[in-house]
Structure formats: structure tokens, C-alpha cells
Length: 392
Image (tube, rainbow, N blue to C red; front, side, top):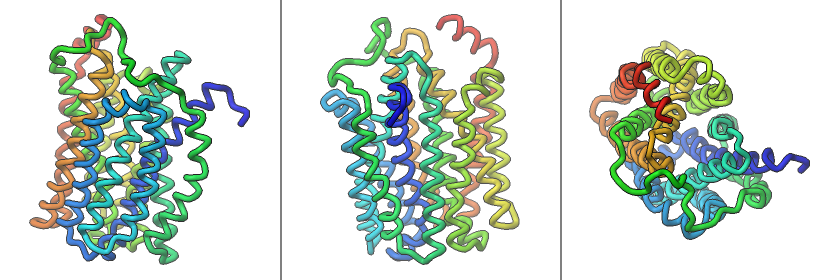
């Protein structure tokens, strides 16, 4: 393709960002059909989603060793092939146990792709000395949108989840050789950290605070994605094709914000963007919970996605800019805490939904958005931010 090397590398890397969320969104959009197909209860669905979080966390903990041995280029390919194998098997599951086992394999592969693709993004920025991560993360949203729309369309035609997966993943598999060929070659075993950053030692408390903020953000995002379609179908009376749009609405807003996130951040600053985003997410969660029609609730998903989308990039960047801290260590710390939310919160929400109803269980992400707004207002005070910037 007639692209400049920087554009070609960025597009190849972006395809792996999109692929991870394409499979994830497709899975979540057909969750009502998979629930009916396997005869699972809401608690069993929560345990199946817990399997994704647990295996994803295991992949994250093993990713440093994997990337040192294979490099991010091979890890992207291996993880994508794992998703291509495990998701069709999940779509064929007939029992909750089969679904959980397939989703565990899918979660490991998805997390591996996520970490390897982020490493590729760092290599691209380092080689060309140009920003790329914001646009790359926007492709998460494009993957979410494509998966959600395909799920809604296939549901409207009455296609089973397995046929839905084949319709989406076969064309995606055809792009895999081109994308893999144009990824950058890294050198396994060679650290990517700056020489002046200490590779050992205790991380500052602020890095852990950033990780907790991203953990709350991911937990709120996961609540909308994991349970949004079921909430619309069971609590708001939406049909399956309308309910399947829940995560797509969230992802559309998140994608749009991330394409313009760097510009907004430079104009508004980190604190106003983070606090304003958390407040918008709080309003979106309220609309989702108490909207009187499925379409109004979908508007709440849009607002929730727009509000939460800048928070992760802001806190990842802040953690990576802490003086005398290896950015790779800081990123790994934040990522581990973030994936911890995927491990804990789906099971918590499943148990709460089983005990009190899904509408009451989703008060938890509302509380998380409130916590994010208050925490961002306090932690990103102008004086503290200026002090960190001067040290940088």
C-alpha cells in the first residue's frame, strides 16, 4: 500500500488494537444469546466474565517474560491467532462451564495482544519521535463499534453467535498477514526504559494512585460493556438487536473523544479534562439507570463513554511522567491494577445482580464515577501538577 513508513506502521499496529476490542465487543453484544444458548444464570455469566479477567491478569503478569523472549511483533500474532481460535469455540458453547473455559482462553489471548500492541505503539513513537498513542487507542473504539453493529445486525437476522463470529473474524483474518508484516521488529531481552530511570526500587505512591484511578475507570467501562446489553434487555424491555447496541454506543463516544483527546488535553489541561469527564460519566450512568426508554438509555451509554474515555490516557501519561521512575514499570503497575478491576468487578456485579437485581447492582459504577470526579479534583490540583511538570 502506498503509505509512508510511519503511517504504515501505525495502521498495522492500529489493526491489532481494533482486533482485541472487535472480539470483545462481539462477544458482549451476543451475551443475551449466549446466556440463552448455555442456560446460564446471571451469577454464572458473572463467573464467565470473571474467567476473562483472571486469564487476562495472568497474561499481564507473564507478558514481560513473554515479550522479552519473543518480542511484541510475534506476541501480537500469537495473541491474535489465540483469539481467532477461542472465540468461535465460545460461540459454540452449550454449557456455562464450556463458555467459561473458552472465555478464559480468549481473555489470555486478548490481554497479550493488548500489551504487545501498546509496546508496538511505544516503539513507533520512539522511532519517529511523533505522537501516536492517542490515535491508536481510538481504534479500540472502532473495534467496539464494529463488533457491536455486527452483533446487532446478525441478531436482527436471527443468526446464531457462531455464524456471527465467522462473518466478522474471517475478513479480519485476511488482514492479519499484512498487519503482522508491517509491525516494527523489536529486540527481545533489551529493555525499552530510559537509562536514567531506575529499573528497581519502590514505586512512588502517586503511581499507585494513578493505577487506582484507571482501575475505577475500567470497572465503570466494564459495567457498561459487560452488563449493558443484558440491562437493556431485562430491565428496560429492549429487543435483542437494540440491546446489542449498548456497548457500541459507549465505544462510539469513546472513539470520538480519543481521536481528539490530545488536542483537548493541550487546551483544557489534565485536571479540567479529568474532572469534567468524570462528571459527564456520572451523568451518563444516571441516564442509563433511570432513563424511561431503551433509546434514552443508549444516550446514557454515549455520555458515559465520552466522559470516561479521557481518564485512562490522562492517568497512564501522568504515571509515566513521574520523575526517576521507569515508564515501563509505571505502565505495568497501572495496567495490573486496571486488569484487576476486570478480575473483581464482573463477579461482584454478578453476585449483586443475583441478590438485589441488575438495576440496583449498576449503582456501583455510578459510585465509581463519583469517586473519580472527587479524586481527580483533589489529586490533580494545579499546584501539584505544576510541581510535577517542573520536575519533568
